[in-house]
Image (cartoon, rainbow, N blue to C red; front, side, top):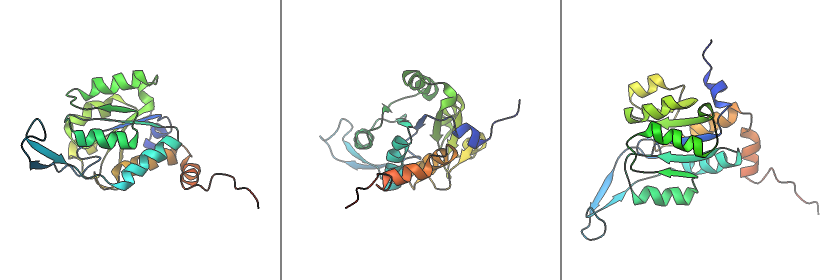
Length: 191
């Protein structure tokens, strides 16, 4: 049987899951020692790109559910996830494939209707489990080799936005979603 193209795979996507460090961020971790403020005696900082935040709204308008699966646990990530109103948030996950499958089942979808965006080898099991594997531009070579699509932007620099746009364009929804997002898809009353 012929392999499906990335666009054909993207047309089926109803759920987009992604890693955090290296996908939503550039992968750098910033720690500020501050005894007494957290269990580890440090405060963690992460930077998030506004384009990636907008992509979650665009995905939602396009009927795509979103969520994250990350090995690390961070209150900063929990705060960003709440801000973005992600449907699925799983932190402290060692087995991303099993977690991916649990989320797909909770969403009532088939595995080919879910995509995963990753950057490092720990993401490969989740990428392999779904219908569309996406790697960010600065992903490790092994990850890019297994991806169906590689984003034009690096992690933390709008890569998630690239993934959402690729999926919505493949589904023929991009123009409508953008018009709705900027308010031009709403009929105006005549004066």
